[in-house]
Length: 164
Image (cartoon, rainbow, N blue to C red; front, side, top):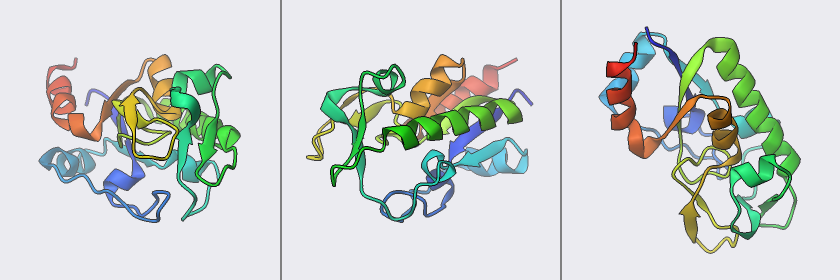
């Protein structure tokens, strides 16, 4: 086995998203990886004590996860609450779990202010989005973990087929 995969809990069918729903990822590789014991499931926000349901949150002012980690941007709820500290803790928890369990890869739900790796929402709560990483995805990438969005599962399958 070439490495474990940290995976967003919502992609595994857990109802942990801000709205109390899941977004199960149906793909033949998921079952195979589960049988091989490769999947390590986490909802970063839940690991930081955030409740379900909770107000939607976005990284403010069109910033990205790297900006939040550097202290240049905030994560704000649609109700105006500042949840930056919780999102930073969520990212640290995910990184710790990944490192403790030998995850070399991460498969994360796109769009999330935590897990987004291809796009995130722009902080206006209008549905606008832009390229960028969420806070957890950014921290995992900084630590050398390869991050893939749910839309890139076939790329991850290919990557694992060529891994040492």
